[in-house]
Image (cartoon, rainbow over the protein chains, first blue to last red):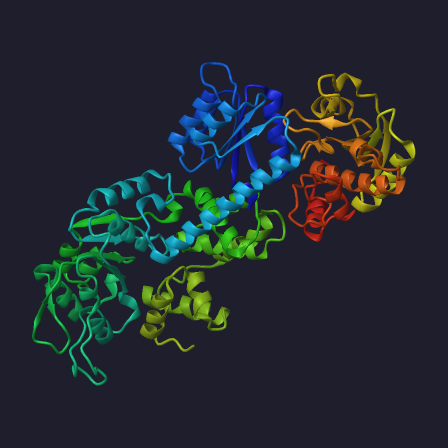
Length: 452
Length: 178
């Protein structure tokens, strides 16, 4: 996991810079060098270094202390080690006061420098692990957690930031695996409702009656088994946000109920006669074209317009291929910690495979592909060989002929049946291959009455 | 056919060099050839009383034979890089030239009685280590592996004179004809 920690060595003496950089590279770190404080700042603006080795005495009006102070303004969390050939107590105290983590006198013992770096990296690994775990625990994602340099995605993120503090309903459209829930959570966390609950409901996972009681709650005795009153998701989300995923799959009756909630901000629990008032922001998401569903009479037009106050369309991964290397690196880094595997990077050949693949399952499929490659990888980097399964998928796609003459539903049923047969009925694996949620798969199995 | 060249500077113990060469050939499975190298007096730093390893590597790059896959020098001179008090050796990561110093591998350096067997064992490990760097290997977290970082002879003595399985696998994948 060392290669993920980047180090910048700053020294005006080239030989000093290069020799320390070479020594650290042998230890497996990614190392860059800078010949002046200004060059160091330029590099620090472009790249996030974990550790800086900064020489105290540098010409050009910007010495080591000044360089360190400027770096700390840019990256307060970075560890800075001041190096000097002239050790005095005063300079050591100044360096430490201004935020240097360590102070070393050159030439120093190899053991000293090695221990110093490994100690800092150990702490940084723990800090990073802690951040990941906390995020996982609280799922406090923000728009900054969305990785993209694509123009369309940047527009999405800007729009999400702009509308975060509003109460308006948002409709997120995007294919499976594009990160609709991540955007919904970012919206919630960036707004004034962040301290209140965020409640996610997968509308496709439940039958009509179950979804109704799940959303609106029920009164004691409302149906067999309703032994006591239960609050629904709308009540749980009071003051916060409710995220209704796969909204295009809800029944005609629920469409009416939902329309009432959006209009009046009130509803009745199942079996109840008392009106319940809530203050909930609704964020809905769908992978189907709701406008088309309206035209076909499958989705209420009035509900569509109520939901579609602000529309966010997340582009599929194949429309933002420049994000593939960024996302792959991000997954590699995160999974290195989770899987405990020290994989340095992704080879150019492997990256070409990732760039050429069509990614029907989008970012989720890319994440799964990186994980699968890491699990089977036996070398220091992920290579073409580790992603050969993607080429097989592509090859299979190329020789396959489109069965024109059948309906979309018939084709979907065929695909699900074939995938389930291939995985021996494994729901998790099948859902992953098709790039859909397990809940969506269960719903479709039920819908098409596919035997398992 | 390309070779791993191993050469000693004039003052280097020839017996130790020949023994090292034989061991490396067996360990790495590459054809090894010996080469005579000039002295490294030009790299002497009077202020430190040691030899700068970077100019030595530059010299080795210039002397690298055309059929050389890599060139590794062995010297009796005590080496340093400017930021460190000493180095046991240095190699260009994934590059062509590397050097190992026998100075601090000798028992005599620490005021102990000369022991050629100990010297040979340590030199074998360090040659493997620096050659590993030449083949793109970085330091290994497995303490027994020859690619683990050693900053003292005690740590060298705790290592095996062999690469661990993952490092060996990485070495095998390195293109031998490039």
